[in-house]
Length: 425
Image (tube, rainbow, N blue to C red; front, side, top):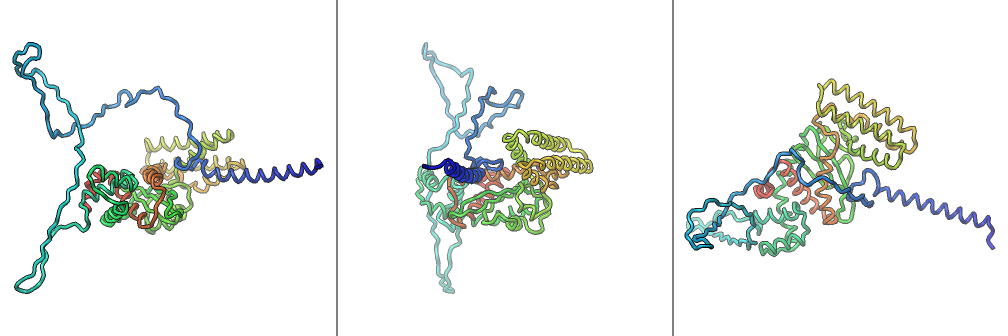
């Protein structure tokens, strides 16, 4: 028979094992449930939205928006010559209703153009002469190249869906490899405008930068985005270090970088704007989990409200510098008070380590207080990541970098993507 002392020892041992296991599981769960976890990785279900009593559409007083009337390409007129009731002859109509109906044309078969290039032999000098021609260097024309590439990277279709769409609409049969080769050819043609985007990014006065994981051939790589006022650049690299920032922005970059708290940014530059959206998300999460933190969250939220107020109606630059210093001092005091609590020290250190970077947006009003531009830019490729699951080769990654960067930049510049892409082919 087991003694009660042995029983207690066994239970204590079991408690130690379970406690250790609980700590390990909490660490693993933290990767999916914290203030910085993007929605794409969150495992916890969001609470359902409350039903809104608001009606659909714009609020009262909002200027009415209507689609512009398209150019009429055909007309059908309906006439009556006799009255259907008494059979008398009808004269001119007293009123005509004009009803516009928009329709897409029936799917069209592809055009197959045969190019006949004649070769000659000069009877006088004996040299061979080839007729001047404009034969494309690939089997497909500019419209086909542009459309296939946009199906893949703008419409976010998997390869099999691209081939299905081409078959359904145009009767064009193409393999998955064929689609890949087409996008590779287009990327080569777009290299020069891609390098122009990098050049403009380097000369920008403020850049919004962010990065996220991306699988390449089963390994973890990093998708980076660099967003300026008129351009968006994507690069996929194996590193998450400052070497990538230096590669893209160059050693001579003198602009301001808006970013989160990742150390690579402080290693590269001393002129930063830390993201307030990240900070407020983290303080809100801590306030939800710990009632003792609610006061700190409220105080930090008030600082952000003051930032917005100063930016909404900015005083002269010298006054803004004074305001920024006062706000910095208040944030420092809040963080120092947080350090008195063991469970808040990590966040307090994070705030204090970036203390000189929180209020750049007050002095330089052209800088946004959040890094939302970069986060929004990444969403498009994160959706593609969900569809594709990842990339299979570095060549495919390079194609994706070029095409998606230019599509995002052209949209920022309000350029028609189909015609713009076609112009470079």
